[in-house]
Amino acid sequence: MTNDPSRLLLVASNRGPVSYGRSEDGLLTAIRGSGGMVSGLTAGLAAAAVDGGVLWLCVALSDADREAARLGARADGAPGEAQVRMLDIPPDVFGAAYNGIANSILWFVHHLLFDTPNQPRFDAGFRRDWAAYRAYNEAFAAALAEEYVPGTRLLIQDYHLALVPRILREYHPGAMIAHFEHTPWAPPEYYRLLPDDVAAAILDGMLGADHAGFLAERWAAAFLDCCEAVLGARVSRGAGGAGRVHYRGRVTEVAVHPLGTDVEALRERGTHADVRAAADAIAGLTGGRQLIVRVDRTELSKNIVRGFESFRELLVTRPEWRGNVTHLAFSYPSRSSLPGYRAYTARVQELAGQINEEFGTPDWAPLILDVRDDYPRSLAACGLADVLLVNPIRDGMNLVAEEGPILSERGCALVLSREAGAAALIGADALLVNPYDVTATAEALDTGLRMPAGERHRRSTAIAAAASAHAPARWLAEQLEALG
Image 1 (cartoon, rainbow, N blue to C red):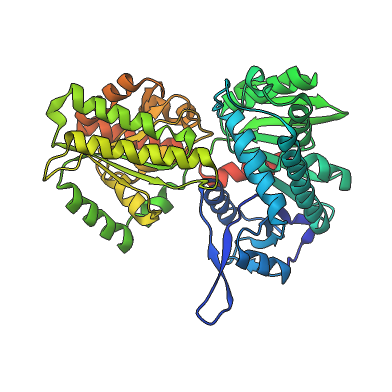
Image 2 (image 1 turned 45 degrees about the vertical axis):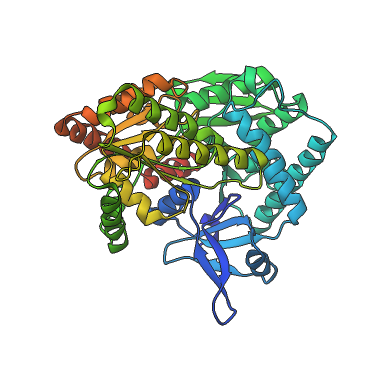
């Protein structure tokens, strides 16, 4: 597979850069994947000159994926990109690990989302799911160990695979392992909602790595605090969230690696015909009115309902905007197998309908909600935005906050939650808001709509420069350099 296997880079994540489908003649065909983590890592790998090549391990999610995995298929990317190996993990094990633990427990902990009078509840069902999560991590570790040769570097991605570094260390004590967390990290007092043994196991698993990376200083600092409070590890802290954790005879370096955007590549993509056609369609639909745009997955952390409530308050308190502004919301379905997400999606749709019924006229729909996942159209909407609203309750980074100002042809005002990791990188040029404060967010929307064109352009230019300084190639290179 490579001319220099000693410099092979192994990447592991739940979702990979490809998925499989079937062509008209029935043959398995690899299709490019999507998602923030996958996009950022793919862009970084494509820009980096990785000696020895890259092998990316991920889960087989569909029937076609599982067939490809059983056949031993390895999807080849374009020149310079990764080969992909899919793991055929039993569906019941995957479902319990992914839905039962990763997305229903760990995601909620790190985003501080639990309705604590009712959840979480750690009972016998949780323990069955936790056993599946361990088995899922063990399967990844075994597959990585199988591919490993001395000198190989390993990048383990995100909270789905928190146990892998420690398990892999038992296979290959001298391996060079990095773990990167794409979510926020909870402070100790919230992290300790987890059962004591589970809280310790997650931290211990990650400390099997030589290097642990986070998107923002706040998240790295919270991780160090948890290692100290939960494990009793010896922690030394440096500047900017960096530090070292001394535990079980090993030292794990902790560092902050903000993820920016390849500005030139994104702007070039914005010139393609499909994006231009989508922009024309949006302009026709909105009638040249000013645009407030948001682009999210329908996740509980994205705070879409309060965003809609802020738009409603804007129309109530500032009637001059009625008929003169349209809120365009692209909210793509996410984790629809979980009841809480289905209920939240229904609430988003219900509120959008209420706002249109309350304020709409025969020639003006105040809020246009679309749940179709359409990347070119999302780019087009960002390019046309007068105001981009990104108001998550809590977010590891949120690349949309960077991409909107980059794509905007005339500059757009960014209304940004102070709880997004991106606030540390670009907050100085955004209108920062408390994501729980509906009134303050409505006021920020009004400020953004009234902002002079020159000021919007200045802020967008500054955001683009900050994003470019932390483009995916640099983000990945910093992690590889940390491994030597």
